Amino acid sequence: MTNQKVDILVVGSGIMSATLATLLNALDPKLSIRMVERLTRVAAESTDAWNNAGTGHAGYCELNYTPINADGEIEINRALAINASFEISLQLWSSLVEQSILPAPEHFINPTPHLSFVWGEDNVAFLKKRYQLLKAHHLFADMEFSDDFNTLKQWMPLMMNARDTKQKVAATRVAYGTDIDFGSLTRSLVEHLSSQAQFKLDLHTEVKKLKQLENGHWQVTFLNKQTKKTTQLEAGFVFLGAGGGALKLLQKSGIPESKGYGGFPVSGQWLVCHDPAIINQHHCKVYGKAAIGAPPMSVPHLDTRVIHGQKALLYGPYAGFTTKFLKQGSFLDLLQSVALHNLKPMLSVARYHGDLTRYLIGEAMQSPAARLQTLRQYYPEAKANDWALAHAGKRVQIIKKCSQKGGRLEFGTEVVTSHNGNIAALLGASPGASVSVQAMLSVIERCFKQQLQTQDWQQKLKTLIPSYGESLIDNKQLSSTVRKRNLATLKLGT
Image (cartoon, rainbow, N blue to C red; front, side, top):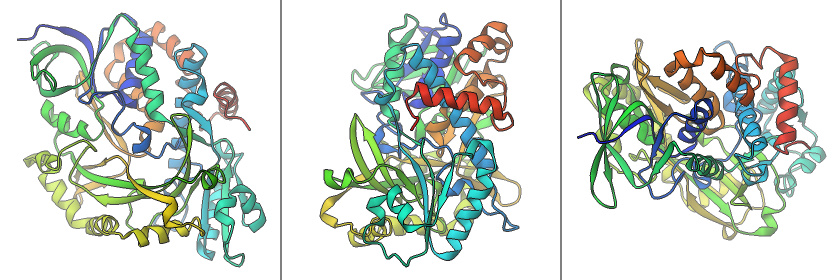
C-alpha cells in the first residue's frame, strides 16, 4: 500500500538526476523531491571520475563529432551543437559557484587544453580542413592549428619526445578546454540538495516496480537492499536517470513510448600511469582518430585528469564487449532487456553491425603488449612497468526502430518521455555528462510545459542560464559574453 507521496522522484544519483533535481529545486523550492540510489554512495557508477573520460566535451578535440559525409565533405553541425550545449552547462555551474551552491571551481573543473592529434598525409589534410571550417565559426574562433614539429613539442612534449621528426603530424588546440571530475561535481550538487527541507536521498534503494495510477501519478515499489524491506511511494513525476540501468526501468514503466528501444552495452578499460615524473610532463587532453568500427567512447586519447584533487594520466579507453548494463550490474542485463517489441531492432543491429561486435571482442582479447603498442603511437617512450590496467564504466548505446533496416544503433543521448509528461528517461552515452544541463532542460520543457510558461520560471532560468531561449550558434555577441563570464567565474582562462 502506498504510504508516502512526493512531487518528483529521480532514480539514480548521477549527474543527470542531480542536475534535474537542482534545476527543479531552484525553479520551485516547494516541490518535494526524492532521489533513490541502489548503491551505497552518490555518483558511484557512470558519473564517477574513474568511470568516464572527464572531458568537458565541447567539440574541440573529438574528431568523431565532425564526420565526413557521403559527398566527402566534413560536417561540423554536431560539433557546433555540442559546443553550444556545453556552454549551457558552464553557465549553470558558474551561477551555482556564484551562489556558493557549488564549491570553488578547482574542486570539480580545471583548465586543460584540448588537442586533436593525427599523423599521415591524409589525416593531416583532414585535420587542416576541419580546423578551417570550425575556426570560421565564432564558437571555435580561438582554435589553433600546427603541423610544425617544434610547436607540437611545446604543446605536448611527452608525446613528441623520441618521435621521428620526419613523421607527418599535425594538431589543433584550444587552450581553455576542461577536465571535469563529474563525481565531485555531482556529490556537491546532492550535498546542497540534502540541505533543503523538501529533498530526501535514499541510498541502497532499488526500484522494483513502476505502475501508472488513474490520476496520472506513479506508484513505485522499492526494495531496501540492506533491510530487505519493500516500500511504496506515489510520485507525480518520475525521472529515470540511472545510466545504463535506465532502459530496463523504462521498460518496467510499460509506456508506449518505451516500445522498440533496446540497448547495446560496451565496456572500457584504461591504462593508468603511476609514475609522477611522467604524469607531470603532460598537461592536456589529446584525442586521435578512432579505429574503423569503433564506438565513440573508444576514441583514443592521452588524458590529463584531476581526480579528487590529484593529477593523473590515463590512456584509452580500450573497448570491450559486455552483457552488463552497469559496472556493478548483472551479466543477465542484456538478456533481460530483450522483449517482443525490441527483438526485431536488436536482431537487425546484430546483423548490420557485426563489424562492431567483432571489433569489441577483439579489443577485449588484446594482450598487454598490444595495448602498450597502441599507447606508443601517442607516447613513443611508454614502458609497461609505468602503467596499470583499470576498468572504466559501462555504456549502453541506444538501439531503436528503423523503417529501412528494422533497427539502428545510435551513439548519442536521447530523452524519452510519456505523452502526458509524467515520466522521462535519459538513454545513451556520449557526450553525456557534458551536456547534462541541456538534456535536463529538455526534460523540463517536455514535462513541465505549464509551469515553464510562467514569468517566474522564465526569469529564474534566465538568471541561472543567461542564454536560455537564445542560440549561441547564431548569436556571436551573446556567445562572446557568455564565454567570457564562464571562463572568468570557473577560472578557466589562460
